[in-house]
Length: 158
Ligand SMILES: NC(=O)c1ccc[n+]([C@@H]2O[C@H](COP(=O)([O-])OP(=O)(O)OC[C@H]3O[C@@H](n4cnc5c(N)ncnc54)[C@H](O)[C@@H]3O)[C@@H](O)[C@H]2O)c1
Image (spheres, helix red, strand yellow):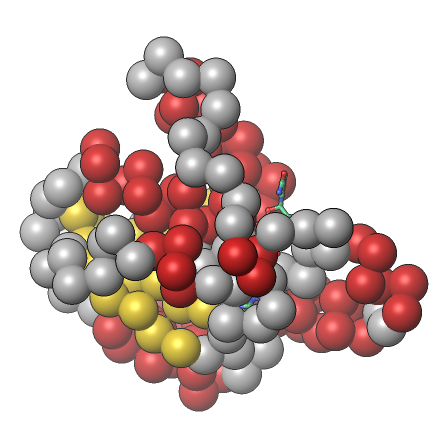
């Protein structure tokens, strides 16, 4: 396969739509989904791609270097590697109850990922808002205003 995309947070809202989009538009790319499966992550969002030869799931926490290394190991292969970073504490209302997970995941976890990306000499990294906008841009290129899959399951927000 010509290219590999390591998607963090691929079981979440934007990440799962992004994985579906890649499967649809880039059938020759490998996709590695790295996700901790928090309250916001739900593999049911990806049931349709489970078993697809181009797709691999790695369960792990972006804050943990060993977990991130496992994800990079799974993504290793021929061709370019791109990292698209969606793993995040994104439910702002929860930050009012407890802010620390937001700092450790969104800031420290991103740094762990960036350090690993540098070690592995990756071709490119898109993060959070940038990646979300890139997804929207790709869907617009496809003549769609919004990604097609609604939120569902554990991953629906109040
Ligand atoms: N939803 C939007 O409309 C929107 C718009 C613009 C930008 N964004 C940004 O895009 C990113 C993704 O948004 P979303 O709506 O898909 O979020 P989401 O909460 O639906 O999904 C986040 C995913 O990250 C995973 N995750 C959380 N902590 C983790 C950790 N420590 N290690 C590994 N995985 C972890 C969760 O299990 C979940 O699958 C966020 O940074 C968000 O701020 C979202």
